[in-house]
Amino acid sequence: MSAPAPSAPAPAGPVVRISGLHKSFGEREVLTGVDLDVAQGEVVCIIGASGSGKSTLLRCVNLLEQPTSGTVEVLGVEVTDPDVDIDRVRAHVGMVFQQFNLFPHRSVLDNCTLAQRQVLKRSKAEAEAIARKNLAHVGLADRADSMPAQLSGGQQQRVAIARALSMDPALLLFDEPTSALDPELVGEVLTVMRELADEGMTMLVVTHEMAFAREVADRVIFLDAGVILEEGPADQVIGNPREERTRSFLRRVLDPTHVDEVTGTDA
Amino acid sequence: MSTERTDARPALVAGRARMSPRRRGQISRGVQYVVIVAVLVALALMADWGQLGETFFNRGAIEYVAPKLPRAALNTITYTAAAFAFSITLGTTLALMKLSSVRFYRIVATGYVEFFRGIPALLVVFAFGYAIPTAFQIRFESIVLQIALALGSVSAAYTAETIRAGIQAVPKGQIEAARSLGLSSGATLRLVTIPQAFRIVLPPLTNEVVLLLKDTSLVFGLALAVGDLELTMVGRKALSQAEGGLTAIVLVGLVYLLITIPLSSLTRWLERKTGYKGHV
Image (cartoon, rainbow over all chains, first blue to last red; front, side):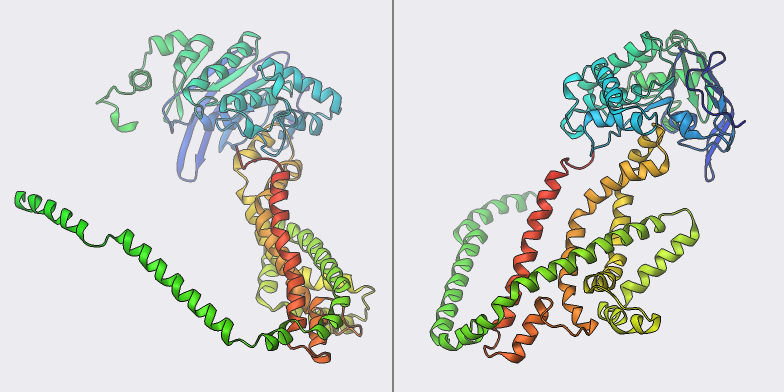
């Protein structure tokens, strides 16, 4: 399939469809057969221990990691097809990173206009208007002319979200967006994410924030040893998990001082 | 065990009676300063100031050399600037070739760097002075171009390695962020990677400018008919033509310093101007 990326969200079908996804780094198999659909407007949180392949799964969606086998469809385009221009798909899939990854040599406003102008070919005036609207959305209208280094971690992450939003994405990927933040700055980022979810944004979120996942996610995926071990509504997976491994993971996350003798070795 | 412990206390008190290391250090520094001052005074008394003045600041030699310095200094700067412009252009190209996924480019760039790092710059200047014009039947229209090509092609081997290191020092997350926004690999390089890489390598690149500036003294290797082109030529000629011992060398040396020392302030200014404190 060599169809270009659609310029608008796919009318029907899932936003993301992952089938039989395998990913190895050399000898090490990180994902061993993942199937996952994300519907339009759905918020899916991926949880799991470190090394379970959460981030790798997320990064396979916009091909920051090249899957070893299996297919990934985004907005109806099979991105794993070598004939697909991945840049055109990525322009509609925003990504927010753990380390923010703002461009330190560009102002906050420039961070939000760079790809709009370069990729979407918007005019300077249009790009800046959209950037300012999204900066206002994340509560940083007054910091447009700041340099990233002048902002706190929470502010930087909110700029990163505004930068992603400025591309009018049909899907947002979040890779542990609050893990690098000081505890008192986590709330401001989660608040913005909660608002986006309420506005109907399709979101795929790798997170350790169980309270957020429980409150905001439509569906929670528990990834363990490269496969989806358990999935379902947030209340069920986090509140009343079926699998023993999910239970022991949640015990460790929710009560870090708790020593779990059964699974303590695979932490 | 317990007896040793009780012994430790009297020893500590006794230690106070002797000179402490801090006190000893103070006295040692004082003695050294006394000796240094004594030596300086002795040198000042023994020196023949008239002779020294004649050797280092001879009036006749100053009058001979000084008028030639501004033009020579300007030429030196011009050669440096031209050579650096060539060096950075070729160096960036070579750096990108070294990082290319095409093996052929990597081999060519590595060969270039190894070759030009391994031979003396003077040899390359000779090549541009005699060998290349003869071999290819060409004449360089401008000395600036000739020296820029000669010194720049050597310097490019070093700037290539510096810039490559700079590009690799840009965090991977920067490239991922750019690509995730839909930027092509070329646009990412141009708008995200290279601007940050240059900011990182600004200090070592200044170093390269200083080295190039000093290498312009190799212009004599081009065997040009004209003399007094750049600073070292002026100094060298003055040595053989005028009295005055080291005067010409001292003056020329001072002019070099006058150019190179402000360069480091320029770097600091540029670092401030590029306006951000490292990566976030």
